[in-house]
Amino acid sequence: MFGLFGRSEVRDLGPEEVAAELAADRIVLVDVREPNETARERIPGAVLMPLSVFDPAELPDPAGREVVFSCASGIRSVKAVEMAQAAGLPHRAHLAGGIKAWKSAGLPTES
Image 1 (cartoon, rainbow, N blue to C red):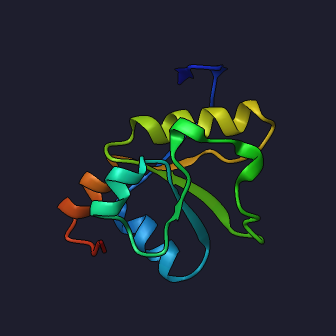
Image 2: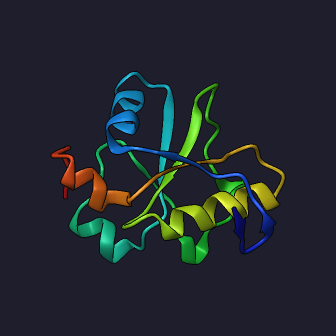
């Protein structure tokens, strides 16, 4: 995949896989949607880091877990992966289809 910062390596994860990994505490889910979006609805346990002010240096320490990005539909989460990789971080996974896919799979959200 060629993205904003040249060649990037992005791994698509489905909502069921993200839910299982989150429940097992094997991932840190980072939601890059804006505050007006996350105030309405978010995935429980997600860390909120809006893409508009996203700084890869401020990502939480995953403490051995994989960082997975999410957004509304999967476009901004890919940009976050690319930004993290451009900053030299190994993160490459995102929730394919975003919270829309999450909800379509019948998975829970909170507001």
